[in-house]
Amino acid sequence: MTAATGMRALAKRAVERTVVGTGLTALARRAHRREVVVLGYHNIVPDGEPIVGDRSLHLPQREFAAQLDILGETHDVIALTELLARDAASTSRPAAVITFDDGYRGAATAGAAELARRGMAATMFVPPAFVGDGTFWWDACAIDGDRGAFRQLALTVCRGEDAKVRAEAKRRGITERAVPAHARCATPEELREAAGAIAIGSHSWSHPNLALLPPETLRDELTRPIDWLRTELGGFVPWLAYPYGKTSAHVQAVARESGYEGALLIEGGWTTRPPRNHHAVPRLDVPGEVSRDGFAMRIAGLVAG
Ligand SMILES: [Zn+2]
Image 1 (tube, rainbow, N blue to C red):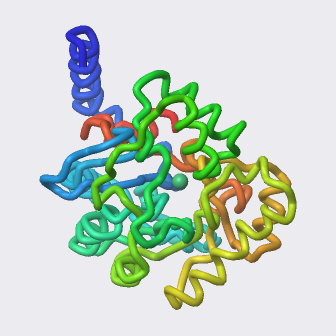
Image 2: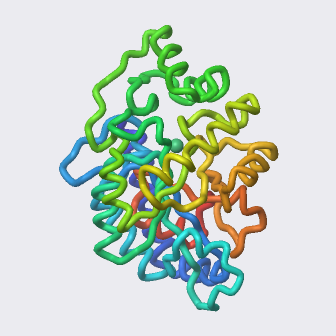
């Protein structure tokens, strides 16, 4: 961090502190009391472990614990499946749903432990092709230059397909680095263990950009995880989180036909209960570097998704 960005971060935190102190957050929450915010997390980094790769995806455990405590004071945490219920009890508090993408080991262990401690429900979306200690290109490829430009190329030219992205990275001289155990995909045993605290859903089979796939591959990417989850985990939530949040009207139709009751984007903010389109439900991304006041503002509806 340079001195200038350090000053900017400090100034941002001071503004957040002031906003949370004024009671604006309480007012904003009241305006959202009949709505739901679906929070999107990725990895939870166990205390004492290093953060490697994109900081926005790797939230330290102590920060996650603090966020859950803030959330529990102001929101009713509900299970994802309750989102579709039409007869939701009326309450003076907004509802929140907790979700994780990618099936990171840190989320399945440290994240699950914090949730279990507070009796809070959550759902994790896993891409079975990576289950069993797999790593994701965005953690394994040490991109020093323009991350946004490489990501754009990875999601379009390479269709978000892991092997293709790694081959392209290699061609550009981007090296692969060691990924710590907590930032790898959990094993089936770890997912079964986490299932006491976290319900498991589908994140497609191998995490491609679904909107760019030919019809047969698209159908396969959506149906294979359902069979796998049924066989390997015994139970699952028939919900899908679109990899990279990428979808289309066609992808949504195939998701519905494949048996998914609902599907999640990665941004867009708050949703009604039940959501208008069950197969394009917005979420509020929680970046790993967000401050506690910044989190309180986000869940109050003061920061757009
Ligand atoms: Zn993902």
